[in-house]
Length: 279
Image (cartoon, rainbow, N blue to C red):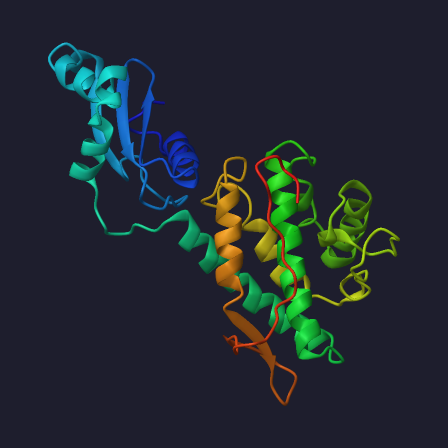
């Protein structure tokens, strides 16, 4: 399939570059040469030409060689040619940073999970609900990153989409992770060396399959615009800090409602993933 007509490789390339915060990416099979602006969030429905800023055929190379060398040669790049090219081709329409997009996605997940957990677990307090929602999302993101970095078996979470009773099977995986990772994120048993009390709450929750399947499904290609193997570690920290800006409240009917966090309310502890893959 020719580069000009093949949407899938273009989407994968832009997805990788967008997650890595690379403003431009190149694709070539020598017969054709394409340049993409990668500040535009990629979607699986994008056409091959979406965000493409240049397309050349091999018959164009000789005539436009000076232009190509002036943009993409090592010397030109060191002198700022790509920065100038990005500025000259950039558009604000449809742009979104991976940070902002990831935060928006997490907010959607939080609302879905909160409604399900509040409905199915009527004895939970507001604090317990906030803790349960945050820890569940933290764990899913952590394990998904581990998959793309080769630490966990790839697509294990995705395999949970087959069949019913997703959360009991997921909880088993969470418990197994407690044996593999020295982390408060998966801390379910008493440990003499750990001051923090173990989590005796979340593994026993009742959570509907629908929100879990939607969240897990959205973590994988092609539904996810993010490439988790290159998701910068600092993004998780930034997203987590913004995540703390809201709190889930319980109404009189024990329904979940997210609102701005009151000053002085201490959030449940979160996690940060280091470049080395630890916690």
